[in-house]
Length: 362
Ligand SMILES: Cc1cc2nc3c(=O)[nH]c(=O)nc-3n(C[C@H](O)[C@H](O)[C@H](O)COP(=O)(O)OP(=O)(O)OC[C@H]3O[C@@H](n4cnc5c(N)ncnc54)[C@H](O)[C@@H]3O)c2cc1C
Image (cartoon, rainbow, N blue to C red; front, side, top):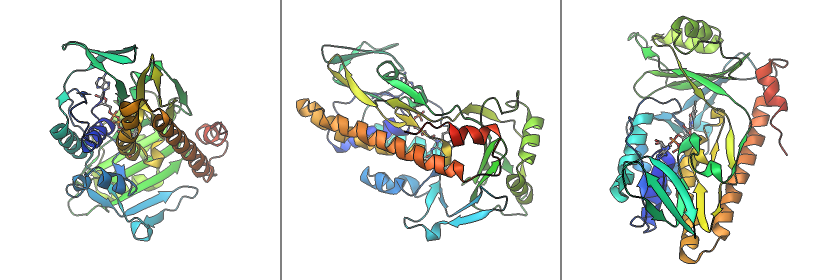
Protein backbone atom coordinates (compact mmCIF):
# COMPACT_ATOMS: atom_id res chain seq x y z
CA UNK A 1 0.00 0.00 0.00
CA UNK A 2 1.60 3.26 -1.10
CA UNK A 3 0.13 6.49 0.28
CA UNK A 4 -1.05 7.73 3.66
CA UNK A 5 -4.02 9.93 2.71
CA UNK A 6 -7.67 9.01 3.23
CA UNK A 7 -7.64 6.22 0.62
CA UNK A 8 -4.47 4.52 1.85
CA UNK A 9 -5.45 4.76 5.52
CA UNK A 10 -9.02 3.50 4.84
CA UNK A 11 -7.61 0.57 2.86
CA UNK A 12 -5.33 -0.39 5.76
CA UNK A 13 -8.30 -0.39 8.14
CA UNK A 14 -10.30 -2.53 5.70
CA UNK A 15 -7.40 -4.97 5.27
CA UNK A 16 -7.10 -5.35 9.02
CA UNK A 17 -10.82 -6.18 9.36
CA UNK A 18 -10.25 -8.90 6.74
CA UNK A 19 -7.33 -10.34 8.72
CA UNK A 20 -4.78 -9.19 6.12
CA UNK A 21 -2.93 -6.60 8.22
CA UNK A 22 0.14 -8.76 8.84
CA UNK A 23 0.73 -9.27 5.15
CA UNK A 24 0.41 -5.55 4.36
CA UNK A 25 3.36 -3.19 3.98
CA UNK A 26 2.09 0.41 4.21
CA UNK A 27 4.31 3.20 2.94
CA UNK A 28 3.15 6.56 4.29
CA UNK A 29 5.80 9.19 4.93
CA UNK A 30 5.30 11.71 7.75
CA UNK A 31 3.47 14.84 6.67
CA UNK A 32 2.12 17.90 8.46
CA UNK A 33 -1.66 17.85 8.84
CA UNK A 34 -2.41 21.38 7.66
CA UNK A 35 -5.37 23.28 6.29
CA UNK A 36 -6.43 21.79 3.00
CA UNK A 37 -9.41 23.01 1.06
CA UNK A 38 -12.12 20.36 0.67
CA UNK A 39 -13.97 19.68 3.90
CA UNK A 40 -17.49 18.79 2.72
CA UNK A 41 -18.15 15.13 3.44
CA UNK A 42 -21.60 14.12 2.12
CA UNK A 43 -23.91 11.87 4.12
CA UNK A 44 -23.30 9.09 1.56
CA UNK A 45 -19.95 8.59 3.32
CA UNK A 46 -21.81 7.54 6.51
CA UNK A 47 -22.44 3.88 5.56
CA UNK A 48 -18.84 3.48 4.38
CA UNK A 49 -17.50 4.89 7.64
CA UNK A 50 -19.85 2.46 9.46
CA UNK A 51 -18.59 -0.48 7.44
CA UNK A 52 -14.99 0.45 8.26
CA UNK A 53 -15.77 0.95 11.96
CA UNK A 54 -14.76 4.61 11.64
CA UNK A 55 -18.05 6.44 12.38
CA UNK A 56 -16.69 7.81 15.65
CA UNK A 57 -14.13 9.87 13.70
CA UNK A 58 -16.83 12.33 12.64
CA UNK A 59 -18.69 12.67 15.93
CA UNK A 60 -16.62 15.40 17.58
CA UNK A 61 -14.73 18.41 16.29
CA UNK A 62 -16.68 18.58 13.01
CA UNK A 63 -19.87 20.38 12.07
CA UNK A 64 -23.10 18.91 10.62
CA UNK A 65 -23.62 20.37 7.15
CA UNK A 66 -27.20 21.42 7.72
CA UNK A 67 -27.59 24.26 5.27
CA UNK A 68 -26.22 24.85 1.78
CA UNK A 69 -27.08 27.97 -0.20
CA UNK A 70 -26.53 28.08 -3.94
CA UNK A 71 -26.65 30.87 -6.51
CA UNK A 72 -26.48 28.74 -9.63
CA UNK A 73 -28.52 29.61 -12.68
CA UNK A 74 -29.84 32.73 -10.90
CA UNK A 75 -28.35 35.47 -8.75
CA UNK A 76 -30.60 34.92 -5.73
CA UNK A 77 -29.56 32.29 -3.20
CA UNK A 78 -31.58 29.09 -2.86
CA UNK A 79 -31.37 27.13 0.38
CA UNK A 80 -31.13 23.36 0.51
CA UNK A 81 -31.63 22.22 4.08
CA UNK A 82 -30.47 18.77 5.19
CA UNK A 83 -33.78 18.30 6.98
CA UNK A 84 -35.32 17.41 3.60
CA UNK A 85 -32.50 14.99 2.72
CA UNK A 86 -33.32 11.32 3.21
CA UNK A 87 -29.89 10.51 4.62
CA UNK A 88 -29.70 13.59 6.84
CA UNK A 89 -26.81 16.02 6.90
CA UNK A 90 -23.25 15.32 5.90
CA UNK A 91 -20.33 17.04 7.61
CA UNK A 92 -18.11 20.07 7.29
CA UNK A 93 -14.92 18.52 8.57
CA UNK A 94 -12.00 19.88 10.44
CA UNK A 95 -10.01 18.29 7.66
CA UNK A 96 -6.55 18.15 9.29
CA UNK A 97 -8.12 16.56 12.36
CA UNK A 98 -10.04 13.98 10.32
CA UNK A 99 -6.98 12.95 8.30
CA UNK A 100 -4.78 12.81 11.40
CA UNK A 101 -7.32 10.70 13.34
CA UNK A 102 -7.82 8.37 10.38
CA UNK A 103 -4.10 7.84 9.94
CA UNK A 104 -3.69 7.26 13.69
CA UNK A 105 -6.45 4.63 13.56
CA UNK A 106 -4.86 2.91 10.56
CA UNK A 107 -1.47 2.74 12.18
CA UNK A 108 -2.88 0.96 15.21
CA UNK A 109 -3.76 -1.94 12.91
CA UNK A 110 -1.10 -1.87 10.17
CA UNK A 111 2.51 -0.98 10.73
CA UNK A 112 3.35 2.26 8.94
CA UNK A 113 6.65 2.58 7.12
CA UNK A 114 7.73 6.19 6.94
CA UNK A 115 9.66 5.90 3.67
CA UNK A 116 8.72 7.43 0.32
CA UNK A 117 8.56 4.76 -2.37
CA UNK A 118 10.97 5.41 -5.23
CA UNK A 119 10.29 2.58 -7.70
CA UNK A 120 7.91 -0.35 -8.15
CA UNK A 121 8.81 -2.97 -10.77
CA UNK A 122 7.18 -6.31 -11.52
CA UNK A 123 8.80 -9.54 -12.63
CA UNK A 124 7.61 -13.17 -12.45
CA UNK A 125 4.38 -12.18 -10.65
CA UNK A 126 6.18 -10.31 -7.87
CA UNK A 127 6.62 -6.59 -7.22
CA UNK A 128 9.92 -5.17 -6.02
CA UNK A 129 9.43 -1.91 -4.15
CA UNK A 130 12.39 0.34 -3.45
CA UNK A 131 12.67 3.24 -1.05
CA UNK A 132 15.46 5.60 -0.15
CA UNK A 133 16.61 3.95 3.06
CA UNK A 134 15.25 0.41 3.52
CA UNK A 135 16.20 -2.72 1.53
CA UNK A 136 13.86 -3.55 -1.40
CA UNK A 137 10.58 -5.20 -0.44
CA UNK A 138 8.82 -7.94 -2.42
CA UNK A 139 5.02 -8.05 -2.71
CA UNK A 140 2.35 -9.90 -4.68
CA UNK A 141 0.11 -6.89 -5.26
CA UNK A 142 0.60 -3.14 -5.39
CA UNK A 143 -2.04 -0.61 -4.33
CA UNK A 144 -1.36 2.94 -5.51
CA UNK A 145 -2.97 5.47 -3.12
CA UNK A 146 -0.60 8.32 -3.97
CA UNK A 147 -3.34 10.85 -4.76
CA UNK A 148 -3.46 12.99 -7.90
CA UNK A 149 0.12 12.00 -8.72
CA UNK A 150 -0.99 8.38 -9.36
CA UNK A 151 2.75 7.95 -9.13
CA UNK A 152 3.02 4.25 -10.02
CA UNK A 153 -0.08 3.22 -11.96
CA UNK A 154 0.44 5.93 -14.57
CA UNK A 155 3.02 3.65 -16.19
CA UNK A 156 0.49 0.88 -16.74
CA UNK A 157 -2.66 2.77 -17.69
CA UNK A 158 -3.85 5.86 -19.53
CA UNK A 159 -4.54 9.08 -17.65
CA UNK A 160 -7.75 10.57 -19.06
CA UNK A 161 -8.70 14.17 -18.44
CA UNK A 162 -11.91 16.19 -18.81
CA UNK A 163 -10.61 19.61 -17.90
CA UNK A 164 -7.75 21.52 -16.31
CA UNK A 165 -9.72 23.33 -13.63
CA UNK A 166 -7.64 25.19 -11.06
CA UNK A 167 -8.47 26.48 -7.59
CA UNK A 168 -7.39 29.54 -5.59
CA UNK A 169 -8.11 29.18 -1.87
CA UNK A 170 -7.56 30.78 1.52
CA UNK A 171 -8.99 30.58 5.03
CA UNK A 172 -10.32 34.00 6.15
CA UNK A 173 -10.53 34.62 9.90
CA UNK A 174 -13.67 35.62 11.77
CA UNK A 175 -12.77 38.87 13.51
CA UNK A 176 -16.08 40.50 14.37
CA UNK A 177 -17.22 38.86 17.62
CA UNK A 178 -20.47 40.86 17.66
CA UNK A 179 -21.84 38.71 14.79
CA UNK A 180 -22.30 34.94 14.80
CA UNK A 181 -21.48 33.65 11.31
CA UNK A 182 -24.16 31.40 9.78
CA UNK A 183 -23.10 27.73 9.90
CA UNK A 184 -23.56 27.21 6.18
CA UNK A 185 -21.94 26.40 2.87
CA UNK A 186 -22.40 28.73 -0.08
CA UNK A 187 -21.82 27.97 -3.75
CA UNK A 188 -22.04 30.75 -6.30
CA UNK A 189 -21.57 30.72 -10.07
CA UNK A 190 -19.84 33.75 -11.62
CA UNK A 191 -18.71 34.66 -15.12
CA UNK A 192 -15.35 32.84 -15.10
CA UNK A 193 -16.03 30.03 -12.64
CA UNK A 194 -17.63 29.50 -9.25
CA UNK A 195 -17.06 30.19 -5.57
CA UNK A 196 -17.24 27.87 -2.58
CA UNK A 197 -17.37 29.17 0.99
CA UNK A 198 -17.98 27.02 4.07
CA UNK A 199 -17.96 27.93 7.72
CA UNK A 200 -15.40 25.65 9.38
CA UNK A 201 -15.92 24.11 12.83
CA UNK A 202 -13.36 26.60 14.25
CA UNK A 203 -15.37 29.57 12.84
CA UNK A 204 -12.90 30.37 10.06
CA UNK A 205 -14.11 30.33 6.49
CA UNK A 206 -12.88 27.98 3.81
CA UNK A 207 -12.96 30.13 0.69
CA UNK A 208 -12.17 28.82 -2.79
CA UNK A 209 -12.50 30.08 -6.34
CA UNK A 210 -12.64 27.54 -9.17
CA UNK A 211 -11.81 28.52 -12.73
CA UNK A 212 -9.54 27.54 -15.61
CA UNK A 213 -5.81 28.35 -15.45
CA UNK A 214 -6.02 30.81 -18.37
CA UNK A 215 -8.92 32.65 -16.71
CA UNK A 216 -7.40 33.04 -13.24
CA UNK A 217 -5.72 36.46 -12.98
CA UNK A 218 -1.96 36.15 -13.40
CA UNK A 219 0.01 36.54 -10.18
CA UNK A 220 -3.07 35.90 -7.98
CA UNK A 221 -1.22 33.57 -5.67
CA UNK A 222 0.71 35.88 -3.39
CA UNK A 223 -1.26 39.05 -4.23
CA UNK A 224 -3.72 39.94 -1.47
CA UNK A 225 -5.05 43.07 -3.20
CA UNK A 226 -5.84 41.06 -6.35
CA UNK A 227 -7.57 38.38 -4.23
CA UNK A 228 -9.71 40.97 -2.45
CA UNK A 229 -10.67 42.41 -5.81
CA UNK A 230 -11.63 38.99 -7.14
CA UNK A 231 -13.71 38.18 -4.05
CA UNK A 232 -15.56 41.48 -4.40
CA UNK A 233 -16.82 40.28 -7.79
CA UNK A 234 -18.90 37.49 -6.20
CA UNK A 235 -22.20 39.13 -5.15
CA UNK A 236 -23.31 36.66 -2.47
CA UNK A 237 -19.99 35.37 -1.15
CA UNK A 238 -18.57 38.87 -0.74
CA UNK A 239 -21.77 39.94 1.03
CA UNK A 240 -21.52 37.03 3.48
CA UNK A 241 -17.86 37.79 4.17
CA UNK A 242 -18.68 41.39 4.93
CA UNK A 243 -21.88 40.83 6.94
CA UNK A 244 -20.38 38.09 9.11
CA UNK A 245 -17.19 40.03 9.84
CA UNK A 246 -14.54 37.89 8.14
CA UNK A 247 -11.25 39.46 7.13
CA UNK A 248 -9.19 38.52 4.09
CA UNK A 249 -5.68 38.63 5.49
CA UNK A 250 -3.84 36.11 3.33
CA UNK A 251 -3.29 35.89 -0.39
CA UNK A 252 -4.57 32.59 -1.80
CA UNK A 253 -2.72 29.42 -2.71
CA UNK A 254 -3.36 28.02 -6.16
CA UNK A 255 -3.63 24.33 -7.09
CA UNK A 256 -5.17 21.79 -9.48
CA UNK A 257 -8.79 20.70 -9.28
CA UNK A 258 -9.39 19.06 -12.66
CA UNK A 259 -11.29 15.86 -13.38
CA UNK A 260 -9.03 12.95 -14.36
CA UNK A 261 -9.18 9.17 -14.19
CA UNK A 262 -6.87 6.23 -14.76
CA UNK A 263 -8.06 3.81 -17.42
CA UNK A 264 -8.16 1.00 -16.36
CA UNK A 265 -7.89 1.46 -12.57
CA UNK A 266 -6.66 -2.08 -12.02
CA UNK A 267 -4.53 -4.53 -14.00
CA UNK A 268 -1.63 -6.94 -14.25
CA UNK A 269 2.05 -6.30 -14.91
CA UNK A 270 4.21 -9.38 -15.61
CA UNK A 271 1.73 -11.51 -13.66
CA UNK A 272 1.58 -9.17 -10.63
CA UNK A 273 -1.65 -7.32 -9.81
CA UNK A 274 -1.91 -3.55 -9.31
CA UNK A 275 -4.81 -1.37 -8.26
CA UNK A 276 -5.38 2.40 -8.03
CA UNK A 277 -7.57 3.84 -5.26
CA UNK A 278 -8.71 7.31 -4.18
CA UNK A 279 -7.47 10.20 -6.29
CA UNK A 280 -4.95 7.87 -7.91
CA UNK A 281 -7.94 6.16 -9.56
CA UNK A 282 -10.10 9.23 -10.25
CA UNK A 283 -10.24 12.90 -9.27
CA UNK A 284 -13.58 14.67 -9.44
CA UNK A 285 -14.61 18.27 -10.00
CA UNK A 286 -14.96 19.46 -6.37
CA UNK A 287 -18.47 20.73 -7.15
CA UNK A 288 -19.50 17.13 -6.49
CA UNK A 289 -17.77 16.72 -3.08
CA UNK A 290 -17.10 13.15 -4.25
CA UNK A 291 -13.38 12.92 -3.49
CA UNK A 292 -13.21 11.83 0.14
CA UNK A 293 -16.17 9.47 -0.20
CA UNK A 294 -14.52 7.82 -3.19
CA UNK A 295 -11.25 7.57 -1.26
CA UNK A 296 -13.08 5.80 1.60
CA UNK A 297 -15.16 3.62 -0.74
CA UNK A 298 -12.22 2.49 -2.88
CA UNK A 299 -10.13 1.89 0.24
CA UNK A 300 -12.87 -0.42 1.52
CA UNK A 301 -13.10 -2.13 -1.90
CA UNK A 302 -9.42 -3.16 -1.79
CA UNK A 303 -10.41 -6.18 0.30
CA UNK A 304 -13.22 -7.33 -2.05
CA UNK A 305 -10.95 -6.98 -5.05
CA UNK A 306 -7.76 -8.46 -3.67
CA UNK A 307 -8.93 -11.30 -1.41
CA UNK A 308 -10.00 -13.65 -4.27
CA UNK A 309 -6.86 -12.73 -6.16
CA UNK A 310 -4.56 -13.48 -3.23
CA UNK A 311 -6.42 -16.73 -2.40
CA UNK A 312 -6.48 -18.35 -5.84
CA UNK A 313 -5.39 -15.83 -8.49
CA UNK A 314 -9.08 -15.25 -9.33
CA UNK A 315 -9.20 -12.04 -11.45
CA UNK A 316 -13.00 -11.53 -11.63
CA UNK A 317 -13.13 -9.40 -8.50
CA UNK A 318 -10.45 -7.12 -9.96
CA UNK A 319 -12.64 -6.71 -13.05
CA UNK A 320 -15.65 -5.95 -10.82
CA UNK A 321 -13.68 -3.14 -9.22
CA UNK A 322 -12.66 -1.76 -12.63
CA UNK A 323 -16.30 -1.84 -13.77
CA UNK A 324 -17.52 -0.14 -10.59
CA UNK A 325 -14.97 2.68 -10.96
CA UNK A 326 -15.81 3.14 -14.67
CA UNK A 327 -19.54 3.23 -13.93
CA UNK A 328 -18.94 5.76 -11.13
CA UNK A 329 -16.85 8.01 -13.38
CA UNK A 330 -19.45 7.90 -16.16
CA UNK A 331 -22.31 8.70 -13.76
CA UNK A 332 -20.33 11.55 -12.27
CA UNK A 333 -19.55 13.01 -15.72
CA UNK A 334 -23.19 12.75 -16.80
CA UNK A 335 -24.47 14.39 -13.59
CA UNK A 336 -21.86 17.11 -13.82
CA UNK A 337 -22.71 17.95 -17.45
CA UNK A 338 -26.35 18.40 -16.35
CA UNK A 339 -25.34 20.54 -13.41
CA UNK A 340 -23.16 22.89 -15.45
CA UNK A 341 -25.89 22.94 -18.11
CA UNK A 342 -28.29 24.47 -15.55
CA UNK A 343 -26.24 27.68 -15.47
CA UNK A 344 -27.25 29.59 -18.61
CA UNK A 345 -26.51 33.19 -17.57
CA UNK A 346 -22.92 32.93 -18.82
CA UNK A 347 -23.44 31.19 -22.14
CA UNK A 348 -20.77 32.41 -24.57
CA UNK A 349 -18.13 32.79 -21.86
CA UNK A 350 -15.22 30.33 -22.06
CA UNK A 351 -15.48 28.66 -18.61
CA UNK A 352 -19.13 27.74 -19.18
CA UNK A 353 -18.87 26.97 -22.89
CA UNK A 354 -16.00 24.54 -22.25
CA UNK A 355 -18.19 22.71 -19.77
CA UNK A 356 -21.28 22.60 -21.91
CA UNK A 357 -19.48 21.28 -25.01
CA UNK A 358 -16.23 19.60 -24.17
CA UNK A 359 -16.95 16.79 -21.78
CA UNK A 360 -16.97 14.31 -24.69
CA UNK A 361 -19.46 12.04 -23.05
CA UNK A 362 -20.01 8.78 -24.94
C1 LIG B 1 -9.71 22.18 -4.42
C2 LIG B 1 -10.26 20.87 -3.97
C3 LIG B 1 -11.39 20.82 -3.19
C4 LIG B 1 -11.90 19.60 -2.77
N1 LIG B 1 -13.02 19.57 -2.03
C5 LIG B 1 -13.52 18.39 -1.61
C6 LIG B 1 -14.67 18.35 -0.77
O1 LIG B 1 -15.24 19.36 -0.38
N2 LIG B 1 -15.12 17.12 -0.41
C7 LIG B 1 -14.52 15.97 -0.81
O2 LIG B 1 -14.98 14.88 -0.46
N3 LIG B 1 -13.40 15.99 -1.57
C8 LIG B 1 -12.89 17.16 -1.97
N4 LIG B 1 -11.76 17.19 -2.71
C9 LIG B 1 -11.10 15.91 -3.06
C10 LIG B 1 -10.34 15.27 -1.86
O3 LIG B 1 -9.50 16.23 -1.25
C11 LIG B 1 -9.51 14.10 -2.39
O4 LIG B 1 -10.31 13.31 -3.22
C12 LIG B 1 -8.93 13.21 -1.29
O5 LIG B 1 -8.10 13.94 -0.45
C13 LIG B 1 -8.15 12.05 -1.92
O6 LIG B 1 -7.46 11.31 -0.94
P1 LIG B 1 -6.30 10.31 -1.37
O7 LIG B 1 -5.93 9.55 -0.15
O8 LIG B 1 -6.69 9.56 -2.58
O9 LIG B 1 -5.08 11.24 -1.85
P2 LIG B 1 -4.12 12.22 -1.02
O10 LIG B 1 -4.84 12.86 0.11
O11 LIG B 1 -3.51 13.12 -2.03
O12 LIG B 1 -3.01 11.28 -0.39
C14 LIG B 1 -1.95 10.77 -1.16
C15 LIG B 1 -0.86 10.32 -0.20
O13 LIG B 1 0.14 9.61 -0.93
C16 LIG B 1 1.40 9.97 -0.42
N5 LIG B 1 2.42 9.68 -1.45
C17 LIG B 1 2.53 10.25 -2.68
N6 LIG B 1 3.60 9.72 -3.33
C18 LIG B 1 4.14 8.78 -2.49
C19 LIG B 1 5.25 7.89 -2.60
N7 LIG B 1 6.03 7.85 -3.69
N8 LIG B 1 5.53 7.08 -1.54
C20 LIG B 1 4.75 7.08 -0.42
N9 LIG B 1 3.68 7.92 -0.27
C21 LIG B 1 3.38 8.76 -1.29
C22 LIG B 1 1.26 11.47 -0.09
O14 LIG B 1 2.23 11.87 0.83
C23 LIG B 1 -0.15 11.49 0.51
O15 LIG B 1 -0.14 11.24 1.88
C24 LIG B 1 -11.24 18.40 -3.15
C25 LIG B 1 -10.08 18.45 -3.93
C26 LIG B 1 -9.59 19.67 -4.35
C27 LIG B 1 -8.36 19.71 -5.21
